[in-house]
Amino acid sequence: MSVTDFDQRRNRILELIIEAYVSTASPVGSEMVAKRLRSSLSSATIRNIMVELEGAGYVEQPHTSAGRVPTDRGYRFYVDSVMDVRHLPPEELRQLAALIQPSELDVESLFERAMAALAELTQQAAFAVAPTLKQSTVKQIELVPLSVRKVLCVLVANDEMIASHVVEIVEPMSRDETFYHFVKRSLDILQHALSTEPNERLLVDGATYVVAQPEFSRNPRKAHAFLKGLDAEEPLLGRVREDLSRSRVQVRIGHELAMPAFEECSYITAPVGMGGEVIGGIGILGPTRMDYPRMRALVEGMGQAVSRLLSQWDER
Image (cartoon, rainbow, N blue to C red; front, side):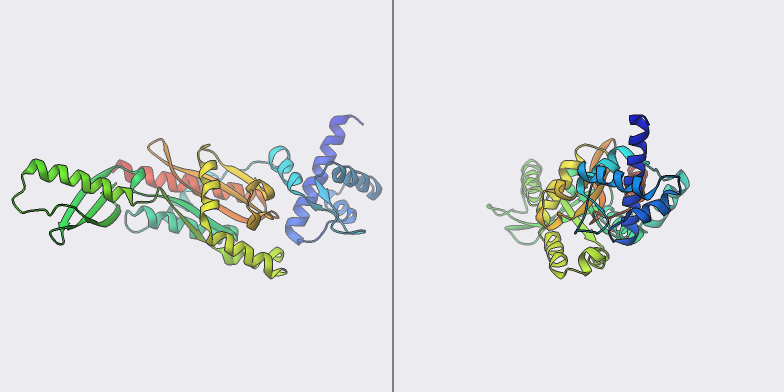
């Protein structure tokens, strides 16, 4: 047998172990692999290959005499070198866009609808990094005097993104100010208002889907740690922000997230763009035991659907 033939069989058996573990959440033995493989390989040969996979760090035994479960390294090798990367066909992308389109041109509502739909489709926690006014072109400013030292500043961008701030000014604004001084004062107020806007908003939905899965339902402490990790959103936002800067779908597995609360989780994130620039992102977070080909295709497709709708709005 050539090395290439052995590698192909080893990869196929790793794939079957992962597929079986994803569907059963239980350690996978050689007999189950043999049933799924449906080939002339004997159980002894399969066991030997499973030992090879364990030696390579791709699978492990939870305890003696148990079957094998994939490791973070095994999932990583599978995602990078074994699984077939799927893409949603155009018709499904159009269906996604129709599913998430809000009744009005509202960016935050679009991200919220996309996130909720993704959580339901994947049965995982879904998240979105939504843009704020700092990442958009302010097209309209309205200043409403509330008192001689307070002004309500209303900012509108792209016809649908709105923020409002009450700004306190040092010098009282008189009714007879010249146009020049009014414009200069307006710019100062605008700068102050924008300084209070966050760079992004992290939205999360569907955490209950995750804590209901065996990894967490059997271990309340893990479920509690997972939920606390979502509440402390800045570490997750920082990791997602880093991956969005690469402008492509990213998969992080287990310890790659570098967050204790999510060390047994994976996430998949896809960028959302408008006008040729990445303005946000969308993704899922769940146990490392997930259907990576399907999850990746859905996350990528949702990112494309949101980007398509934003581009259509921008052209109006």
